[in-house]
Picture 1 (cartoon, each protein chain N blue to C red):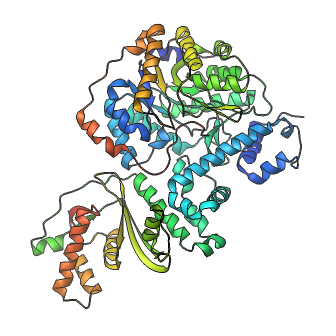
Picture 2 (picture 1 turned 45 degrees about the vertical axis):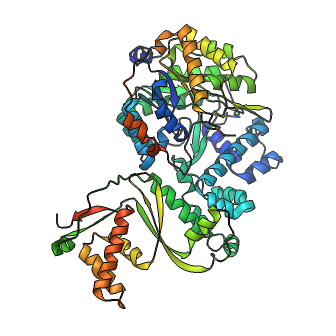
Picture 3 (picture 1 turned 180 degrees about the horizontal axis):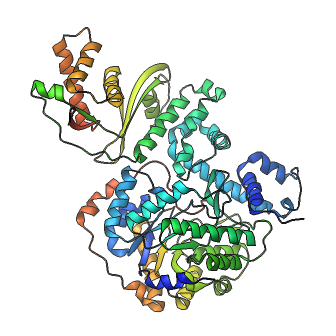
Length: 273
Length: 317
């Protein structure tokens, strides 16, 4: 009988280490027995399997601490099942967690109890994405908007390390309650919420900003294409029909100032240059 | 068999006594930069990443010599070598001007699935040929000297045709590369597989050792696990002395990946390395470094990312 090839050995052991069913069949003697399987150290298989599981649990708990707290005694089995469905396929360790939201969206039993769980996972994942994104964000000078010309020719620079989300649940409130280990009573009703998550260039930390619909639309407009201050002011006026245009513009200027202060906007740029 | 590596080894710089850069230790590492000669980075924690990781890398590169110690080249895997990985790695080691780079004698991926741990290989002739060929290819792409680390392993794979010492030696000779000797792994394996660590060291080509890893381990259910989560123990210090008496090395370093102690404890371990080196190989203790700027120390808070896990190159338990 020819010696097993390296690939055959790697295939068999990877299955035993990573796949619970294959491992249990092997350990209970139900797997096909051949010259190769009879040489395998059972205790070694179990030890490596437990080390790999420990690593998976540790990784997911570090990326999704709030989901772990929410799912509590279901967490371990959820993570194990996630890795069976979506095995890690990238050399970056944290990337192994990137399809968790997608996995949760396909778990009717979990969604029945926690309809917001996939959105919560997304909320936790975008923090990771923002922290690690390979883009340099640096502050530029802010233009003082004191001439009509400025409004037309210049626009804000949106922080390039920013992710914008519209959720069906008030995920930031849910996250905050979970973080402080408080009851979720009263915050899990379906209600639209808007969140921006971005990396602060001065601290490298991720910041979450709860938004109302108008600031969300302003950021979305800037994600879609550069806009001048005048265009954004016009957008604001169109979304606040009950206000006088001057009041709407004043409101836009307030939003602009807040975004500048919070490093959502990182300065001003001339749009025709 | 070629021994070009041994000629090249003579020209590699002596780095002295170093530490593995970990995000949890980053601020302390910077604050205590005058006590550390060089740093080892895990490239997967920096390749194509921005934010705190990038800032940390840029800042430490300003004041420390850096060496890259990868965990996911997957040299033993029968999957094709990951070209994207190798090109990103090359970019990184060029950026930090690493005098050499390293990875493990293991496989970490199969059929495109990354296990994110260091899985053992069967000690077979096929595996010797396979790994040594891949080392040559990877070294040619990265364009800098490669050194291979012996891993700790907790089970023998089926179909072994030789001992671990023979397996390691044959690959080093066939690939003509250097050895990153993890002394703690030798100790851990000697406990788990019941052999004499001193004898093991006599069976491998110590002249190829460029760098030494020192670390602590943990007893779990009758096995000794290479956790990098405890203090280095005396028998491992003894093995370090044995190696340093027998061959010239360029660098010794401490790996600490969990249960982080006060930095004073880490400093004590680094000092113990220096005491041993002073007795056996004083060149390791005479490293001259440029002064660390106070700006850098002040910027330490920018280095610490707060979410996710870093790969540290060790199995966790």
